[in-house]
Length: 148
Length: 101
Image 1 (cartoon, each protein chain N blue to C red):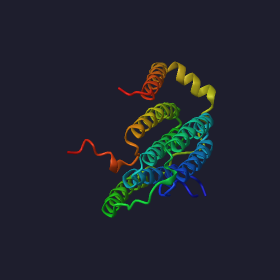
Image 2: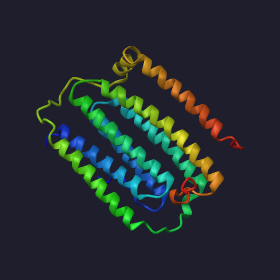
Image 3: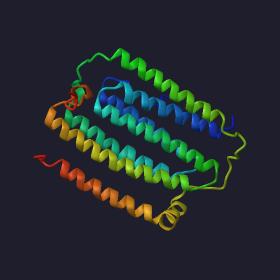
């Protein structure tokens, strides 16, 4: 499974690979019986966020990105740190107990998730709505013509 | 083959590492942003897998909040990038060193 390619020169290609990754993650969510989250993933990420990304790429005209030399030292250092973090993560994954049963009766449908969201997690839900409002106002203010 | 929790966690760790590598290596602001999205998605996958395997729906609610916050973050960040590009005509991090010196 070819997941994620952040190393292509063209940003549009990177964005398309990210769409592929997000779609396959939605498939994994379906396999994990999280149907509502799979739908939200496709709608929000593959729909809204990626359209936003592609729109900004077109707007900034990054298509003709000049060939810059990658910093060799930076690549080496980044590789070392990433491999170290990956090693830590995989070592901790290898220590998780294997005997957890998979066939739990839990289904992440919209009914169950919604009732949980509106009863137990009502306050975070409202805070998130406030956060979205603040983000919207901030974006409108940021994209005004003369930025003070 | 039976798919266990470890497989999902391994995929999640790999995705996270790929995203981190992209953030460190790449020099384009937009690509860095996409790699941050990749890392968020890796965390989401781990949360959903744990939620499934421990028979607990709280993880999925948390993923819902993460997706919401990520959408808000992307909109604000892209607006910042566009404003920056309008002022400086560049989207490369190596050209944006005006706070250095």
